[in-house]
Image (cartoon, rainbow, N blue to C red; front, side, top):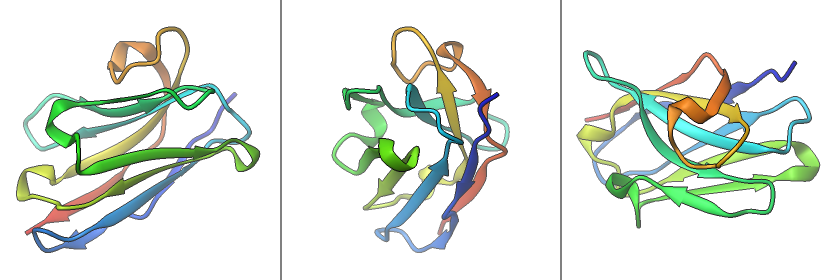
Length: 118
């Protein structure tokens, strides 16, 4: 079974940057990043399939960049120009099927890493 471990969260001022990483215990299929703010539903941020095809939520286009290293089964999310509304618990997920940042595609989830933008 795939196990996912996120790292790289933290606190940053608005306009700053953070890089999240997700170790995926050898899995190289569809991967995604999601986030959930208090009182809000989980929302998709970005997804990347095995070949590197990427999808982004409109709210992060031009600011976030998802990438992967299949040799290391590692997926990263580089976040720039961060805004207070980006504050959330960020989750890495693994899925199958159409690789888009829709939670219904993903069956395996990490525990999350907190991102706080002030």
